[in-house]
Image (cartoon, rainbow, N blue to C red; front, side):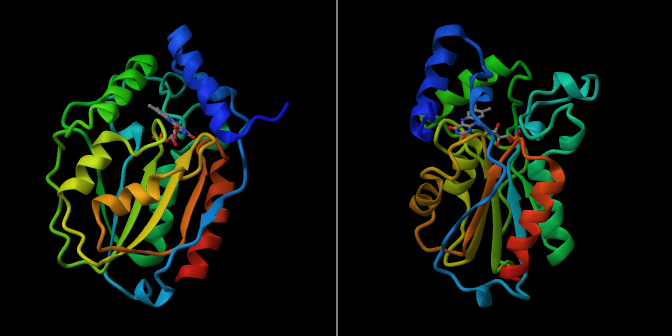
Amino acid sequence: MRMNKKKAWLVAALLVLATGAGTAWHFLVPRRTADIVQGTASAATVQGKKSLIVYFTYSENMGDTSGMTADAITSASLHGEKVIAEGNMQVMVREIQKKTGADTYSIVAKTPYPAKFEDMTQLAKRDIQEDRVIPLKDPVPDLSGYDVIYFGSPIWWYNLPAPVRTFLREAKMGNKTVVPFGIHRGSGFSNNLSIIKQFQPGIQMTDGFTMDAKTPNQDVRRQFDAFLEKLL
Ligand SMILES: Cc1cc2nc3c(=O)[nH]c(=O)nc-3n(C[C@H](O)[C@H](O)[C@H](O)COP(=O)(O)O)c2cc1C
């Protein structure tokens, strides 16, 4: 039987609640192709413009993992399988950098999320449900010198991680062009593009790219490059 995405997530969430297992979304069937969501901003607002990449990834929000083996690091886009040796969020960030020379800003919570996956998922859920403002390690940068923001985030509990929401609450994006990209385990962007717009109503968005976090690095790279080629 094939479950629709919302149902699959409901089952996953129920399993998490019933068993305390944080890995319930691993039951979801990985999708290997990217979702491209249409935006309204044209490529002309991106090409040759001064750009900043803003992104969030759990693997940079777990505190010091230098003593941990790759297998012990549970960040879905960064784990022990050879085909996914690098975090897929970082793979995308590097591809943008290579093509545009953009600066980067990683959204990192001042207090790291627990490395124990179940603890982290529950804390992440409470942070979102209670709409907590999360102190960030580095202050939100001055965006006035940038025309384009590449904005990368995973989806957490059908939403943006609370540190990403905090960034969006504080950032002064004005009417800049935003290129959204993300990773997920079945939900695609869900409502995240409209959530970004709620925080930053003046921005204009280009097409967005999202992909299953467990896709092999080289597939993400190839499909994301094709997306960027069209945009740039
Ligand atoms: C707390 C938490 C909640 C998540 N919620 C969702 C979700 O609602 N839908 C989905 O498709 N994937 C969900 N995922 C999977 C993440 O999107 C996936 O782990 C992420 O893209 C991995 O990127 P990262 O490890 O680089 O942060 C969730 C993961 C975590 C840790």
